[in-house]
View 1 (cartoon, one colour):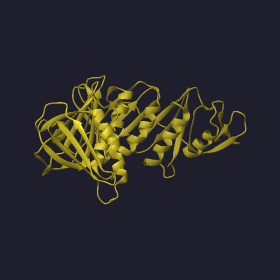
View 2 (view 1 turned 180 degrees about the horizontal axis):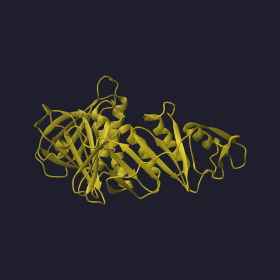
View 3 (view 1 turned 90 degrees about the horizontal axis):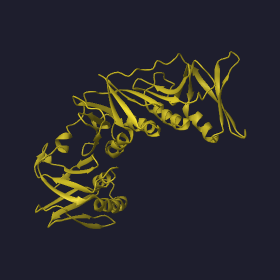
View 4 (view 1 turned 60 degrees about the horizontal axis):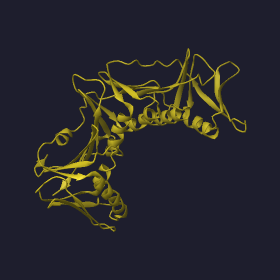
Length: 382
């Protein structure tokens, strides 16, 4: 992992978590133990450690903190691969600053070290390990994360729900009326299903570290009250709700067997969603959401949107169906659904006329590509 990517990710995490010391916001730690060097963030919510290769700094057996934003800006100005980075000591022989020089020595930055620390105590992995393909895990999060982003952190939907069972790992996010779900195969069988919640604010930040690493797999360790994500280049330990007690029962809809189903070509839906974005952007009534009408009849699915940009769009139904229905829903929900990272050739759309929690049952959309399952459901008005 590039040093600049590690500093950027850790600084962002440090700015958003609850620090152990009041003045630690935006600061990251450095530690050198024997032949191992690493950067870290250590808070009450998580410990995130990124290993450094080739002993980047010219020091041993020392721990200190530094302003991550200041360090990142200095390194950005000296972006050449030939730039040198070194630790400067004060008159007492203790580290006082990090000196960064450009290759041609036109620029020289000295970033002060804010504090000399006691050696950080690294948390050890505990619990059973589940190995998951890194790219699959990234796609899980990217396919669901947007559904629960930018919502009130006091609500239960501010979390991403992960499940690991006998042969797959899944992630669910939502905002109360719109939920997304994705699952893929895991490499280790799990005798019992394990659930845990991760705050979306933290999930978004640790994903930058996971994405930047060169590892092909990540190991997930699950303990009574914590979860660890580990690979060669990083270790992330998080305190979590292992019982997922605050999560609503979204699986009641995702696993729904009742209702009527129609199949349509995914490319057609993606094409319509791109046009839908134009109508959403031109919608002038900011106090209400733009509604989309979907009609099912005579083996054809038709959409109509009434905005400054009026849209009508027809799609052929792939399976035989004599089902007839007119429903309305928030246009943005369909647009977001089509932004899933793994969409198969077809989408199955499930419409159920029965009630759910005293309201009309949500519309459920499902697709599958090479074992990667993606689902979304959102509220409707019949």
